[in-house]
Length: 213
Ligand code: DC
Image (cartoon, rainbow, N blue to C red; front, side, top):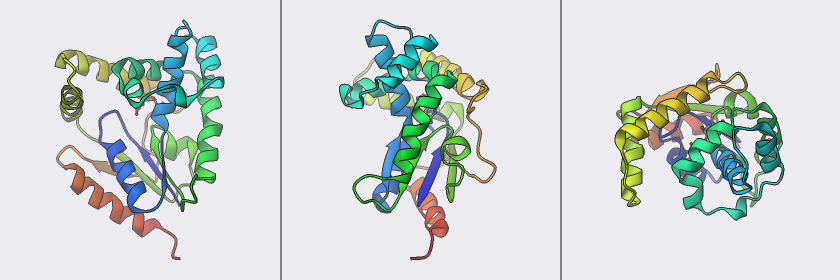
């Protein structure tokens, strides 16, 4: 069973995907963290994440264990990720890794929940359950500000908004794997849903798509 979850930053898809994986005995892959790790690897090597040579080298030498969750979730990593994600050669390196995970989920799981931007359109186009999770920009900015303040960071809301708009534009407008819902994706707008309500709706949707045992 493969569940493809796509959507913009701070739409609530990460929390949702993790909860679905736990509830349905599926492995979970946050594909954004792969792009984040590639971006940080390029920076740590003294390179520029928006330069193809530096970014591809980082993707080929990727060692996820070199990064803490805090490193990966930082705004610096998010911005670097959207720069490397713009490069088709980087996407090609990461595509194989993602497909292998989906077809051979670890720990004897019954399948995988893949969370990203192009899972339903490119990485797993045959996934039986595809969900495109979205929310209004204001709501997403508010969530990201709260998340960062809860972590004790000092944040300027206008900067978070500007970064998120820039990242949305880069994700949507790139020629390779732009952020768009797959034709057969179910659109889940979480603007006025809390995490529990979004989870309940998504779980019912996925269960209805599961093959009979
Ligand atoms: O979901 P996130 O914020 O961790 O993603 C970080 C960046 O990586 C985001 O700008 C889009 C990019 N990304 C992508 O292009 N394709 C994916 N499957 C996952 C993330």
